[in-house]
Length: 120
Length: 110
Image (tube, rainbow over all chains, first blue to last red; front, side, top):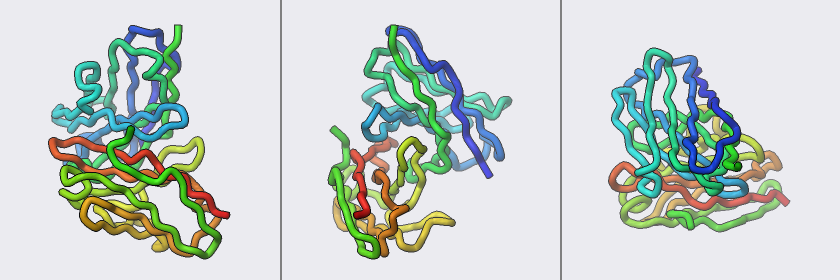
């Protein structure tokens, strides 16, 4: 079955760019009908949708983050990535990647999540 | 402040039923049958429990059910078990391809 795994630095300095990658195994990221998605969860808080990408490159972002986020896909590596620019301490969170349906109706499976701390 | 409103906590005794509400607007919960529910245990990733308001993924117990009336969706867990203790989040598609979440509900099994 499809599995997702996040990877990237656990510590990022303020004002820098947070970069994470999600590796997809057990299935092709080119499968039609799926959006590849990023979420985050601030410590002790709820879930926040960051955005998603279709394998063709079409993207949709949370309007609250729109001008700071870029999600890209590398079909040759079967992975997709998140870049969040100009981070602050408020971007400290557990970041999850997940597979979503083409509407944003459901998300499954999820990666295990990776904690990113923004601190100097 | 989350886009969808959920109670912060609910509790019930083993064997009882509980319902968690999720209130949105005509632009999300009320406008589309694209509501999903996720269970999150401490330190773990969310797990899909319900999609399209009332559908269960393969492998999810039939003790979990979902419904919707107007702008409010609900998750009902019947025959509560200790293993159901977790945080539960609702999610909905919102107009213009946006995804919104509730703030989460902590379920305590007494």
